Image 1 (cartoon, helix red, strand yellow):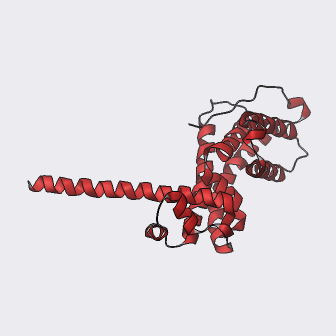
Image 2 (cartoon, rainbow, N blue to C red):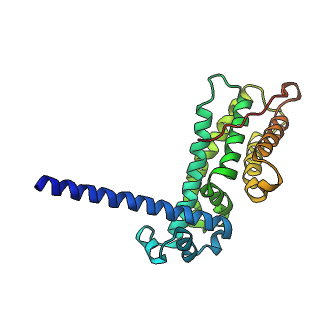
Length: 225
């Protein structure tokens, strides 16, 4: 009997922890939606609570402040896109040419930003709006993702796949900036995601590659699971 009571208490505790994890995730997801639509200055906990189907005071059980919640959204979004793009790159066959790897990263970035995650969209749209102290804490995660692209460009340069007159740092930042900006203008009613990805891949390949290295190929889109 004592063992059964102990087991019941353990199960109840585990159920409560699971519910708390789900509720926290629901709050973060709701905050990402509101943050994407209204921006940093316009995001209010009352709106987040409405989207999450909670009473606003309940949010303070999980987050100390509005700022702490927003920071978690931006941090999570930055981490997710790095993880997803890295996963796509890790799944490519050994020996995949560097420019093909860059194209795969372009596709994965756009697919995740434009289709898969409000967290990522919220992070991209609002990272520049954050207060200085909060933004400084986000730079480490952004630097980690930047390192993924830095290695892609380094490998392409070593293979002779980049035009020698390019400033590789400027080229890399322009590519990432263009991909991020797609979150602001893309409308699925005006064109398919696959068409946007194929166009971006073509622009990147032909913009970066020496004329002798440019090849016509059928672009591939690594759909995220």
